[in-house]
Image (cartoon, rainbow, N blue to C red):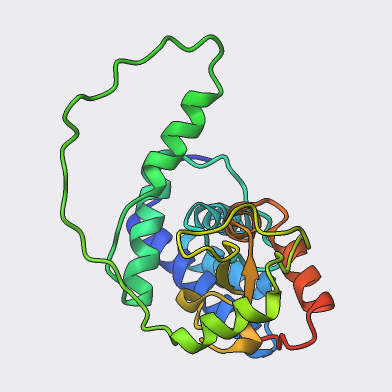
Length: 225
């Protein structure tokens, strides 16, 4: 897809995507095609072009460890510059501070596709940069209860925690099935105890949605939000 999209077009696409995602979470009816048609009439591109751009937005969401809109499978063919702009627009539309990670992730992935990479010299003294991150105040009691209910086993794969933490307890991480960044609640009906591997998979795996469905099927306390 051409990278010659204007900021106005990208912003409108991101706004439409987030609006559809909001309606999906609230169980409200909507038709994706209607959104594509409205955008196509507004900007003179085809509905297919906007559908594919929405899939690019899904891909950016996966790089951020976020959930993506059902039916819009992530499409990787998006340039780093456009992906970076989409990331910034998502933060703008959601009213969040931008902590850019997408361009770096895409660059690393593209570099990894090359064969016989030369050993890089790296950077002896990496520069630091200050950034503001949105942190959510979590309930320690929720974390403690969820871990206790897991009984030292990952609630996704069912295997024992891979090691004991410095406190001597089985090491599990508490994950919000609907992420706090996506409006999820900090409650035991939205939290699970996971091994680090499954936790990363829930954020970044291409099968993340399938893993979420598996959690809802196997853990009675979970409630879809």
